[in-house]
Length: 252
Image (tube, rainbow, N blue to C red):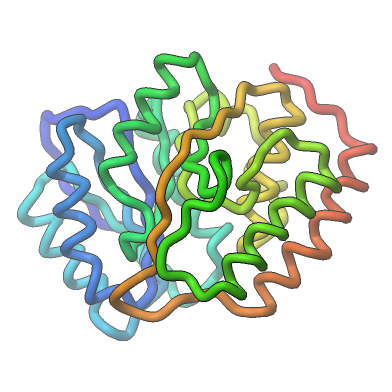
């Protein structure tokens, strides 16, 4: 784990998992650091062979205290990347812990809106939602739009969560949410991880809200989505709901 130190303190951090994102790494970091509200950045790199980590380390040198990286030995799954990032961030007293993609499908400017919505609406979890006001997705093939949209409908039907975009990966958590979760018991590794996190927050009674965003398909680099990830989400949701009948969700 490499990070720099400085007297700077932000109350918000954004965790950005990266694998082979050399085309986007520098630009996404610069865009976040340029926001009018300061967000620190934690990159989780899964041993990208394209030199992504070296690009991030150069940004660490340029911006002491604002950028950190955790380097892992290989592709260990999106869920484990975020769990590691959550633990690291909770140890550093951030109030707002966000997650977003590295490929500009999530607009960095919307990080400010997510954090502000947590303040304005006293929310514990704020989701940047593609589907809360229709379908706000740009440049995705129609098949993938339909798959994603109806996957969220399916999850909502099974879990009864009042959330339109259950697979969203653009989320802001207040620290008390992540402190309440037993992070080592979050089971899913792929995109079902996003569903499990929202379902767990919902079951604990945290206030979860959605704000509309426009999701734009990546221009540079390669998508990490595959049918195995989708299958985990479809079948995992039933298991998630079933297991919830045997678990007590009590806040300490």
